Length: 270
Image (cartoon, helix red, strand yellow):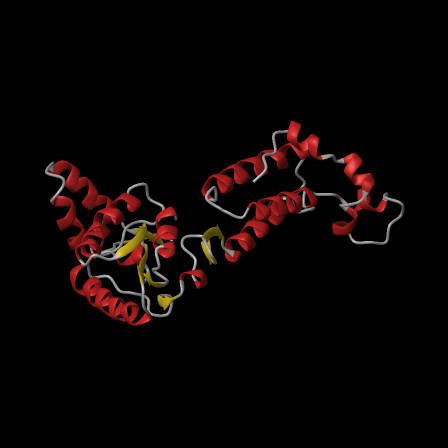
């Protein structure tokens, strides 16, 4: 993300946002093995990798053989994808292009829309012929960087370029918090705190490059209000007729469930 921000700040205000169609399902085994063989000479290792890719998938209780793709979620798949797409990195470097790639997400930064369209066409052809990979035309785009996300971040461009959490990522974050803090989960306060701590720690680590501190303050406040105030407890607050969300800001509940209680339980902030 730092590299992408630097490219945009240097005047590369157009991006070729490449999306490889069903990348992990479409990797050509022979093309991939030819790249691996350039780096690995041990035939036992090569045989093991080939067997890993040919292991097949379970379909309605039966094993179905596969001739392309790598198992998504498998420990080797990210490494194998990088070995294959290293050729793409070298091609982009050879062309003198500014780019950032994260697994199968690749953005190329240029200074004009005309150059963007030319590069999109050239790379689509190159990927198809050299690596047997198809570019998803519907999800790929030639656009301004601030209108795209990569990966989970957005950019705001003014006098400076700011890297922020994308709106889609914030939406997914809130959906996950709501699922964890639902009033019908039956979880104790300690169980809820453990689950939130695990999720928030990982989320904070991934989005540590966010340059909008006010967002984190807003999300921390939102989390504190989402921490599972029951309807019964809310109803005890002066017989209020308001909904639970508004009641969660009441002085009575701030006394009953103060922030330092959750700090003592180990709930981190984002």
